[in-house]
Amino acid sequence: MNKTDYRKYSGAGNNFLLVNNTNDDLKNLDKITIELIEKEKGENFDGVIFLEGSDIADFKMNYYNKDGTGNALCGNGLRCTMKYILDNNFSDKKELTIEAVNNIYGAEYKNDDFITIHFPPPKKIKLKFKLKVQFLEWWSLLTASYFDVGAPHLIVFIDNIEKPVVKSLNEVDINNWGRNLRMHKDLMPEGTNVNFVEIISVKKSEIAIRTFERGVEGETLACGTGSISAALSAYAERNIQPPVKIHTRSNRILTVDFKVIENKIRNLTLSGPAEELISD
Image (cartoon, helix red, strand yellow):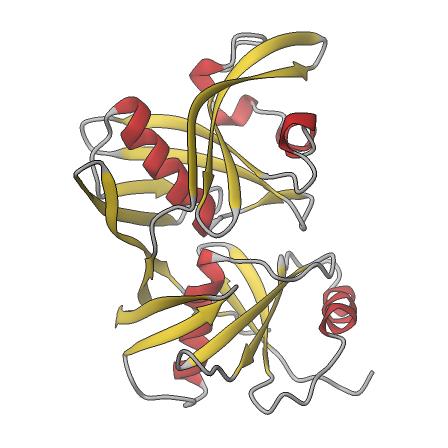
């Protein structure tokens, strides 16, 4: 492969390699992704974002997971894409539209690298259904909810886990339990991302989250679409009112805001930091 220039970005701990492909010079993006991730082996990068031209928006975010699978949406990646566009003077507008997975997302640069992304309503919501799972040596029926906000997400509140009793997110065996649910037979063939959620404060609208991400096949330090799904689930199931603050594993906070009008979700946004990672 010819040398591919890239820059490193983080969206609340969700880390990406950003590549300029606005001239459509790069092909075999799955192979390029795997090679770039391998080059940065030892660093915690979750995928590669190719910035491309778009016929329906200002730019296109073409995101590939670290395993080379594409056609993926990434909420934190959208914020990093916006920051990359501004940092490299591809545009000087503080409000842009970005195409991703055949949808258009509005992006707004606020200040101090704080960026808001506007999302359409979820494509699918299924609340409080039962899944038969095995955690450690226990089999149990687990209550979960499912959201498709451009990427599929399963939401599990840790106080719904009966065996074993889980008192905090630190007790979640994220890799084993996450993989168990990510590949659950009732959610195949595409599988799902899995989010374990802890309520911090109903009054202050604060929750904490850990995410097992498909394509990464492990825990990510933050997940934008997972945070959106968790916030919507917290509203629907626990009456937590927007805006909802989500404490990610990186200790950065994402904010999800929305309105519910006539039982329909409107004005759905994800806000948080995006910054370039400068190598030593």
